[in-house]
Length: 122
Image 1 (cartoon, rainbow, N blue to C red):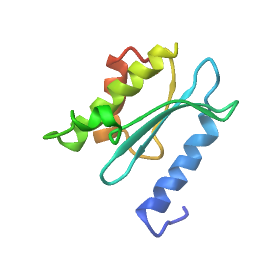
Image 2 (image 1 turned 180 degrees about the horizontal axis):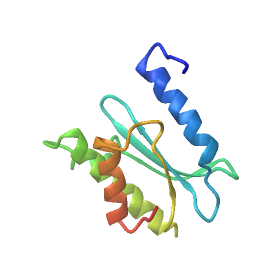
Image 3 (image 1 turned 135 degrees about the vertical axis):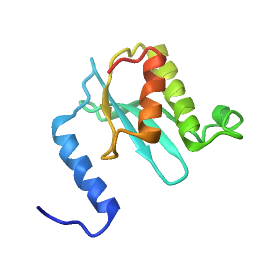
Image 4 (image 1 turned 90 degrees about the vertical axis):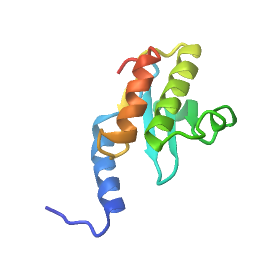
C-alpha cells in the first residue's frame, strides 16, 4: 500500500479513486461537496458538458445571517437545504453524491441528509 505524507494527500488520493467510478450526466448530475476547515461548499455538476448547474456555500449572502450561533454541522445542513432547493428549481431531482474523498460523517453527512429532506434523491 502506498503511504501518503499528509492527510490532504490521502484525501486527494481517495477522491481520485472515487472519481473513476462517479460521473455526472445530464439526467443525473454530480453533487460535489468540499469541506475546508471553516466553510463548506456544494455544486451540482454536469460532467458531460463540464458545467456547474447550481452551487451553494455558507459564504452566500442569504446564508450568512442564518449561520450565526450555529456550529459547523448545523451550517452544513443549511447549505444542503440551499443546494436542494436551487436544484429542484432547475428541475433536478436525482444526483450522484461525490463526497470529495471525505468520510461520510459529520458535516458531509449533515449536508447530504439536508439535501435529501429538500427532495433531492441520491
